[in-house]
Image (cartoon, rainbow, N blue to C red):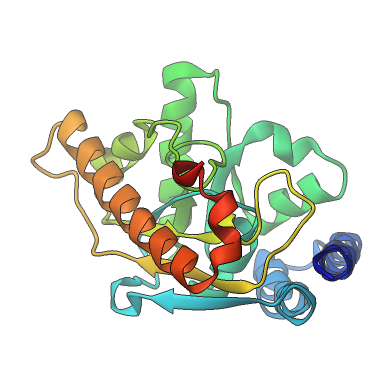
Length: 253
């Protein structure tokens, strides 16, 4: 049954995204606000409905008192595709920092561009970092929150690939609060997996932290500690409630 449910969830989910990317070509002729509204209020609610309806994945938001509607940077743990699509349902108009190669993909990449995503050349060195700061500031100055995945890529639940210091560079230069976000999404929508497991995917927003008065090492250690420790708690809670996802947790292998 899990295979059939996963097949249906994937089919309807990605079909909705594909249709959205196609219709985006027309919406892109309108001001960017139309594109943001189109994806946040029309495409993504439908796509995520299929995820819930067929795969049985529900969403729970914790720490809502820590959500800053604008002028904020969110440092989110990255375990699955759910973070990249569901986030705007909790924090409207959010945009993301992503690797520049993604915006060159036909249809999908064009959508990222028109939505206002912030492409970064990972091999661009100091010049790329400065360009990222300018782009992020431009977005936050208009009131759009920005999400960065500090590890730079998806990680299996219970693991980390190390937090990159780009988030400190942003926080230090733009002087905005950084809201850490912990998730357990990889237990239900695993990286590079066809299967989707039913359960409650939690997004927990933690108290904002600041780079002011801290060294890079201090800030990065604090950020990683608060996110990873909370992710460990969420993973443990999920495994106790849904024992079948234990196999997705690397720590338990």
